[in-house]
Image (cartoon, rainbow, N blue to C red; front, side, top):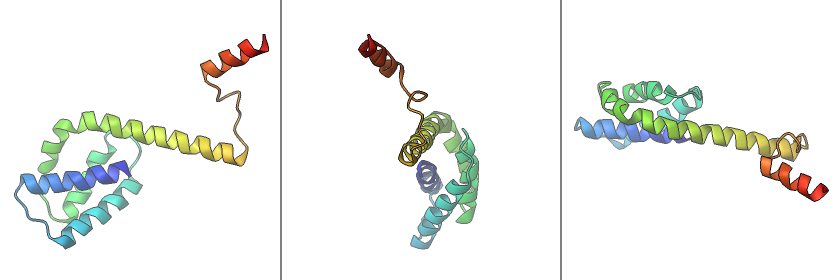
Length: 121
């Protein structure tokens, strides 16, 4: 979902940077295309910038705007990737725990291991 927000905001930014007025239909198209593109985007660093071209083309915005966004994309992409990895791992852990398949010993943090050893003494 973070990538969908990034692509929608990036498209609106490019439109404003080039002085293009977006109609309500174009704004809805941007949102729908961004959501669909974010579903199909690989969860790798830099994947969102490539999919931004799809969103820009869907409403006829100039692709030259990607050059403007690319200047700060690397820094923002690190945060998006971190959020994505954290969310994927957290949801996997929660589903595993709910299904009863979670190996508590394998997922114990070093502090939990230290506490259990201290209590065993």
